[in-house]
Amino acid sequence: MPIKIIRNDITKLECDAIVNAANHSLLGGGGVDGAIHKAAGPKLKKECKGLGGCSTGEAKITSAYKLPCKYVIHTVGPIWGGGQNGEEELLSLCYKNSLMLAKQYKCESVAFPLISSGAFRFPKDKALRIATKSISGFLSENDMLVYLVVFDREAFAISQRLFSDIQQYIDDTYVLAIDCCCRRAEYNKGSVFDSYKNSFPAPSAPAPELSLGDRLKTLDESFSQMLLRKIDEKGITDSECYKKANIDRKLFSKIRNNPEYKPSKSTAIAFAIALELDLEETSDMLMKAGYALSHSNKFDVIIEYFISKKSYDIFEINEALFAFDQNLLGA
Image (cartoon, rainbow, N blue to C red; front, side, top):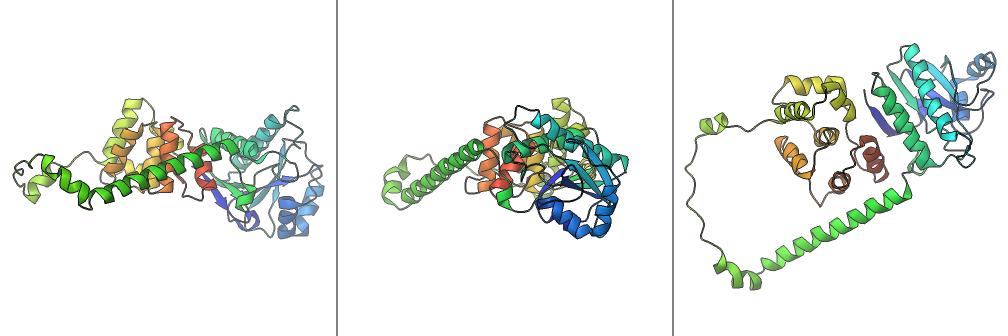
């Protein structure tokens, strides 16, 4: 199952388990920790007293009490000290140990905050990359729906360099698109058109009209058929493809079993990213589903940016889409 990045209050999320970014005592604190303890009620603190605390990178589980989930998984993230004290490895362990504990308790869905990115001062862009890398590594071998929950956009950040590069690409592409539109408008005003209209060749004779029946007999390859062909050509398995696309197994099964299935645009692009298609191949795949990339659409321009850079990490792409307030790929 995929990763979903969402804006929400983690204490109100209905799932099997939520993860608490706790302190060593597990007895509550500020930020997410305090909010979870407050929403769960005093029985949570009472149970936590019997756990004997928790070391950095480890995880422990309790009941959720008044929260709308079954369990609370408590993990202690590292305090950022410049990156020279194994902080990144410890933060990755927080996610891995929490996910293994969720699996042990047969959880099908789990929600994480961005651990250590608040009072523990871990740089948000680094915290985000570690979170998505750790979670995606687990999901490559396990099925679980994982939410990465951010309370507001200010609590979420991609690297400033990446943000600036994408913003520059968007600005340049929009300028190009607007310039092309202006040139086309000027061309059609008459002065330019009149001077060149006689230089165009005469139209060729129209092709013989085909009946509707004949047209239906010559339908092109469908999206589903192209997807399955590309999977075979790339030499990967179905599960490798839909996991790289951040797509649920059930949705992939629908596409595989129905040659006429029409996916959403974001789903079609997610598969193009998973298959590492170039821009021409991506456009072809989108056309099979009835879509196209447009320079007048910010979402499309961001997708084009990553494909042109041959950057096919769908989680990094989703982080960028989220930062620019766009729909995400896959889930």
